[in-house]
Image (cartoon, rainbow, N blue to C red; front, top):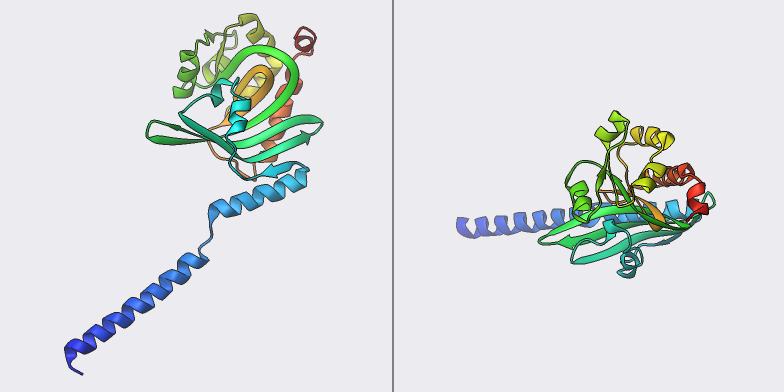
Length: 223
């Protein structure tokens, strides 16, 4: 066998060995999305909530009265939690929508109420708050300079906004400045520009319920 043939054999062996190594690597490489889904399912069992990892195009339509869920040309929910937590009916899900050439990934925590509230959005001064403003939600200024710097509150009903944003709620929000909140119709929702994190779902559910508890009860008698 001449040197040229030996070189070809050697190269073939090297390619086959490399292919075998790469095949084992990709076969054994952890799938982070699969692991996240498994962790979310385990959390749902712990919290005694129903869990459905499959895509659902109807759920965003169900909550389409929430402005935050009306964006994009294509949208769907997945990794859906549903049931009662600490006595309150809740629904939690990953939410994806397509706008132009981009995909956006959010997560949503919704608590359903016996109410028919006007719309109110509490967000931050960024493109998302400008989105809310484009929908006709006027920006309301509060006496608390710290709160007004940290958050943008938009609502067509100024009285409702002041009823909701009382000193105790503002104090809570100043201690939890990562929250984006929408109250509308029969729901209060907190939203995050991130997919569901298994280690944060229970914590965010607790914060959602705390917001519900901070809503004045007289709002429900007048709803």
